[in-house]
Length: 514
Image (tube, rainbow, N blue to C red; front, side, top):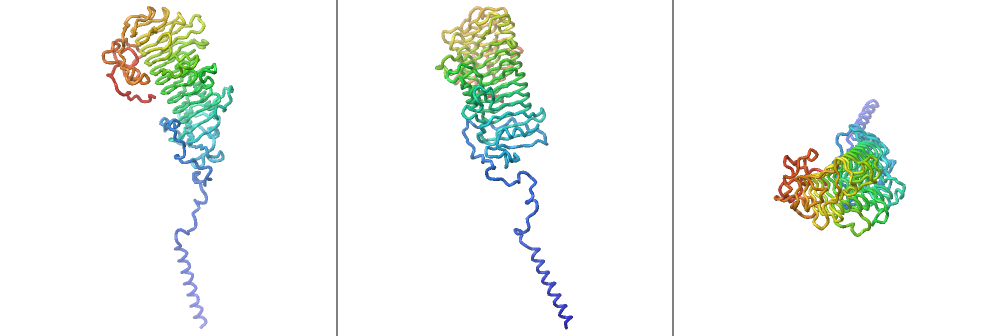
């Protein structure tokens, strides 16, 4: 009897254990034990983020259209597979790992932690700090520092107090090589805005404004400034009060093979666009207007190409004392080096105090223009003395003025110049007879019949009408194979900057023009 009871009791216990086991194996999924990967994150993006470190949503970024740089279309896509992408946010923390969800706080901290091939995106906001970039990229793996697409990024100098006046410092200074810096605003520096001193570096899609002295400058080797909007800089001389003339955008103080292109430079209180104490500079496809001093300035420079620029004055600066407002000015201030081999072609100039002027430094052997070609430009209506002024020096060398259109519709002369055996004129169209020293074979005297479409701030204004005497009357020059819009000129080129293609009602689609 006892044995039978013990067998029954064992059976009941086994049945009860089986039921318990079945219940445990079929627990609902939502109360299962958490898996280990949730407790031990390995991806930095999975690190829990504190609210203060989370970047603002793009909709919270200021959307003033003048402050939003263009989307970074020029960022390379072939960077190293081992490169990293980092982020900075105005509400980040420099103790963070620099990821999208845990960004760094300052641009200075971010750039100091980059290596070749890395990308640093700056999220929208205002950053009141001086930034110096000393790290290097390489030719195959440049370092990319860019405002985040669609967000307005401002590097700000605290109302012209950072850096201090007279310090000579830059708000943003690029010393490293192979750096691409883009899609931001650099504003209100107490000294200079942005300067590039390394080699093979690029600044592009920037707004540069409100800086006390220089706006932006290239001083290294093989550097590029592309698609910059540069205005209201050189505030030290605002309204002509300061007595100094900083340059808004320059390739100056020993740059080699610098390129400034597709930039808009206007209403700065010094010189607009310049290259000086330089070699192999190219200034092309820019717009420069209403700058206090020279709109474009070339001094102490060799092997310069100045082409396809639009230069004009609206009269904005006329009420301020002492302003020069020359269209294109050439000079040797210190003869280091003596300017030589300068090519000025396919430019449009309107309404400046002189459309083009050579300003001689101290007269001595070599003080004039040396191997300068001024060809296929259209110069219209100077407001001071003469349209072209080459009267400062009678000593020039291997310099040619050819295939230009020079229009002066008021009582001012078309040109002031002294005869020089080293300065040759030919095949120019003058709206009225120039002085004898400027006359040459192939000249035409008369109305060039410009289309005058819209206003002189539009290149369409400078087109030729179908019966213009300038059509087919230029000579072929090896240096001038195309025109302002990069149309090929062919075997019978036209005088002036724009080859006749019919009278156009809209600007031709030329990639990259501002």
